[in-house]
Amino acid sequence: MMKTVFIRTFGCQMNVHDSEKMLGVLQKDGYFETHDPRKADLIIFNTCGIRQKAEQKFYSELGKTKSYKKRRPEMKVAVAGCIAQHEGGNLFTRAPYVDFVFGPQNIHMLHDIVSRRNRSLALEDNPDIAKEDLPVKRGDEVKAWVTIMYGCNNYCSYCVVPYTRGRERSRSSENICAEIKELAEQGYKEITLLGQNVNSYRSDINFPGLLRRLERVGGIERIRFVTSHPGDLSDELMDAIAELTKVCEHIHLPLQSGSNNVLRLMNRRYTYEEYMKKVLRLRDKVQGIAITSDIIAGFPGETEEDHIHTVKALKEIEFDGIFAFKFSSRPGTRAEEMKGHLSKEVKSERLQQILEIQEEITEKKNRSLEGTTHEILIEGESVTDKGKLTGRTRTNKIVNIPKVESEKGTVLHVEITRGRQHSLEGKVIKE
Image 1 (tube, one colour):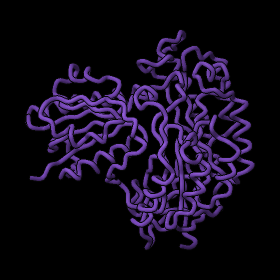
Image 2: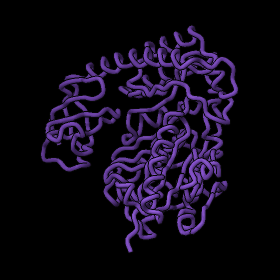
Image 3: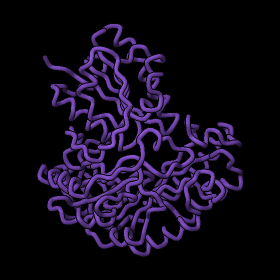
């Protein structure tokens, strides 16, 4: 009898890729994916605990399953990911209709977990997580995510990841290369290397060494990686980005704040001046590199002067784009216990100013690209206009072009005809 599973994913690319692994494991057990949770035999919520908003969305979605299960008592409900790891058995109390709870290090146990008749809790540390070779049901045929390391050692004062995903563990370069060679044989053109602090990868070789080894894998045309910690952005890594033809000219390098006082409270272990020096060296070594970042508005103890330093940093650096968020307190972190928590109104005002400044910068940078030529990898039809195709430049900018006879995965050269705030318009020059 056919069994169906619905997976709702919250959070970052690492969570999305974890969901692909869950689908891969369950597919071997005869499960098929459904996009209608009301008809699923198994519902899995793969949660993210980094920000309060994602947590609120999860609990809202979880509440809906109570009525689904009332109509179909045989349905099973599972909670996975960071919230599962942090809340554990409390989830059974809060939502008695939940059957299984398992952490991000326990995906390898999924077959056994969903086979159990009684409630099951799996939150064990998995020392062999970096050696796992789980099946993956990927959601794309051209671009693939590849996890190269797990966990985090940085203990930023606002972050739950070291507590929910454990300490850093890196896969061997041989294991990573084998996976990527297989992806190339399957027709994948672009890979994105994933890690909580991907550039702190250390196994039999370091991260720049891994990039140089992956450069030699035939069939793969583009290599990306997220997310990088400024403290691990070495000259050796900058040289690798500059020299390797497959490594794309884009880096996501979270700044978080332009204030040294706030950076110290965050335990980021760098100053704004040190960050800026690395940005300048990177731009000098890698012509035309796009740099994106994360900013937290309204961290505990952040003064108006601290906020002004962040605004100044945005104007000085001119990121290509940012993800900016109001600070949200996370249970169990040091920031939760700090003095000087700001009101929602102050945090919202500061966030709005940050976003408005960055939107102007992004639009200006995108308009400066008008008339220039770029290589884009076609990803398929545009979501907003079925008469157009969409792709990304090597600098990770979205480009929409009039529809042409080109398959997904084709590389086209286009001239940018218009720069918008969040995307570019272009026309094909040659395939």
